[in-house]
Image (cartoon, rainbow, N blue to C red; front, side):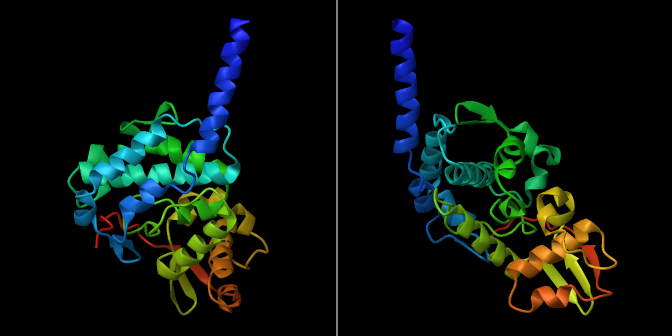
Length: 251
């Protein structure tokens, strides 16, 4: 009898957590305020609001996510990654590059209590966020570097995630997903590092290009302005990978 009472209590607690958690992530939104834009992050201004960020991160520690739907889970893990990354930069007094921390291995060396378990940033990105969707997830994850798609000015929320991912992908293409010179296109190295995430954009193939190069151009074309997709599918176009800029994404 006691076991069943315990079990029912546990199930009720989990269901209650899923229902009461703020899937609009207002705490993170209020912290970010107006200090994040396409041009970068105003870390100096955010430093004065650090207690609000710490309070939000503390909320993430005890959440039970298995009862969240897919949209809610994507928003949760992406926002957790971004919030922890901003906190890391503030904790370290704004280094010139995140690569200066822990010998460039900060994604594996630091652990955070998120959803009841100690996790690294790589755990959150590769084990939790990426498996839930496709290459668009890279448009919403930010590693505090200029090479990344710029940090979202507002966090993801727990509904209509597809439209949010599409909007973020469009923004990324507009800002720093690629540069073009005549028939040569230099794409962000994210397309090279995480080629498997963009696999669904590998077809139809573009003559003369490897599948991952085709995927990069098809993705860029899909979320770019009208006519760009046709321009990037031109025979004889070449693809290279732009050197990633690890300098801090500050204003």
